[in-house]
Image (cartoon, rainbow, N blue to C red; front, side, top):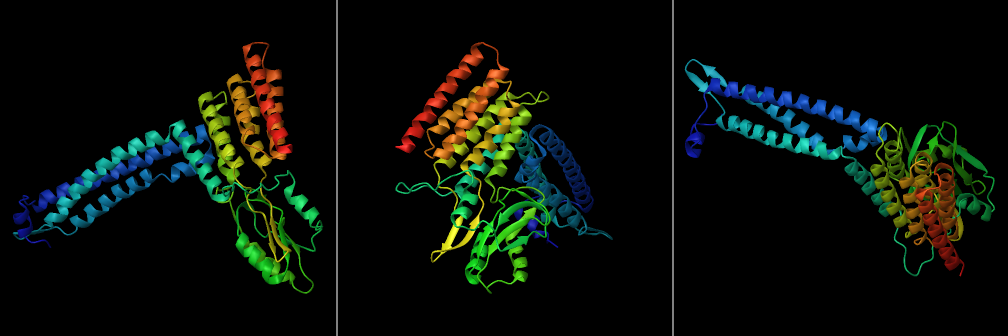
Length: 411
């Protein structure tokens, strides 16, 4: 136990055994009560976030450091006070009170009150639509930076055809695989260990093609690897080793799936356009963020999907094309926002701006397809007024930019 000289040296008045027990009991009770309040606020916040932004965004709220740290501080203070109380001895004219520990309990209580203010401020900020959109958008931009390398000035872009996986197999004259590895699992494909697949292909002299991509839902028994082995170099029992290269779960993740974050932004926009929420400003913010990420992606190299070893093909994996990403980012918003002039006009503006960053013919065709479908929806939904005139003006601007970039790419 702490001797009396500690309080004499510091000048802090000592606390009697009875007062110390009462003080620590009050602190422990208060901290437990505040912990219950935090749990209640967190559950209400999750309920609001689930109904307004979608259940898939709950992972953003569950990973909040403010909630985790605050719960740890309050629970830790309560446990600390209980442990100190167990060291207090009183009776027979002799009292043993850990004076320093008692005062530390008071300091922890003050520290906890500061964290309570921090927690309330963090939750109030976290639930705001603009901050939710920003959080997902930053995760999307991080996925773009992580998965897609910067394009070098002197390097041409890889072809971005709609059927690039199938076209590559056709070019290699490998349309029918000799063997197929079927999944013994079920769930959303979250990641593929490409390095391990490539190493196995080089060791066995085989060519592997993965016809599924991250984000796809894999059913039990689905073909996940197409195998072209050299004669006598492959044992069918080795197919089970390939399945260890796949990670599946109950939901998509942005680990290797850029469309995961994009789908979350699309979900926020679609919910904002619903009659129950009716928040077009949030939908417009989502369109801005999606357009920014797609524009950034247009200036990057396509992700590597084909590997060779001394001229021999070894591994081919399926990747979303730029056209797939454009469709993911804009199709559902167009479908659910067809009766909102501001949404449709903003889509036309952003797609027109994207056309200036794209120099690939297939990518320009994907943007043109979206522009045409948006304009068709406008013609059906809007009357002959200023809205339809504005939409036609934006449509013509977008078509002009697409035509200019198409002519530049052909030249």
